[in-house]
Length: 244
Image (cartoon, rainbow, N blue to C red; front, side):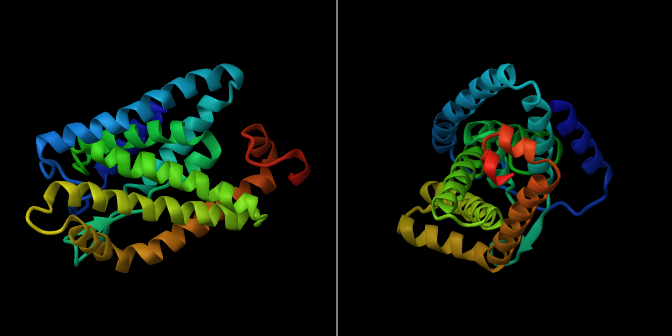
């Protein structure tokens, strides 16, 4: 997985592009808030590492799949889309798909590594804001996408629409989390809820179409995997034997 991430980092570094701020940038969060978000995010990452260690013993193919979908999250979250109102950029999350296939805790690990490499090599986000970014994209994005998928399953929606819900939820909750992290730290004398609403709404002109696109891509990938390699989805307990 690490080799795949570094290969993608090198490729992206080799491509000339105008620098655009992504995630919560370095130095935005005061030290106390930065430490708090690390404290909240790291237990999820630690549980994810434990889950990965257990799962790779049970299923030897789990680790290669972790690398593939980890690379996908890295690439998804590296696509900058300018948000003029916010003075920043938006991007897909990809954690809905990784949470469905690998589990939400493992998806937190993938998000953490992706964000760390982007902070180190692409100047996206930062090391001091890594905890806040991991909480937003890794924890809220992964668990939001995971529960949205199984909500769709409980409603007996098709696999595509379950994946669609997961992609939309992961994307929107990532940006809600980003907005919350920033609003709590930076609202000053203003109402925190007012600042939260302002930041979150600033992302919506680009994020609404982007979350719909991410939902369609997530659902489409799941349908494609079921068509060409249903054994992968059965092994990961995404679908039952009778659905293949």
